Length: 190
Image (tube, rainbow, N blue to C red; front, side):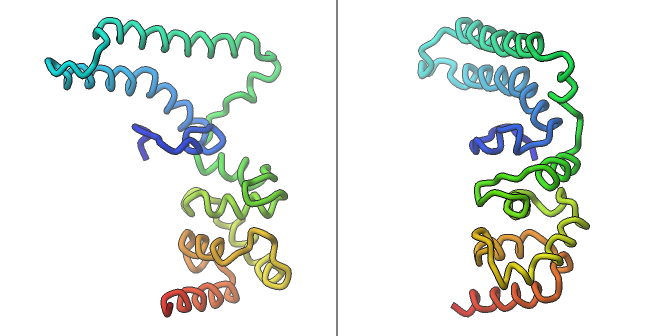
């Protein structure tokens, strides 16, 4: 989706987006969205007097803010350890980013610590189309029964409902499909 407006701060953070999308959103904000919003505001306000700042002053302020942001980026780049610059940005698709960072590397999430908690959070934070399907299927198949016997703190009815909505039925082992269907029927009966 387009990042024209992004009211959710989580979606503005680079950890939530792939590097390509995040960098594109920054460039878009600085050079397209901000000037377009300023132009539109003054165009719509012609003669109404709602905006109390002279238009030229607003453009100067925007130019100054944009220049400050670019200076900050240049300063960051200039002071960065040269041997580590290659780790700052890597062009990855969202699917690659989710697989490499959220699925394989991450071990801390809002719902708990450890790789399983991070993966459980990833399963409810991203659409199925960007998740590593084979890895998710294998993870669910190898852990579902154990989670039923000794549930982790994040293994709740709410989590099962979210993953049940997020994933196609064939991603789940048979025991999970039966359980999700029974829980769905129980909710519908209420």
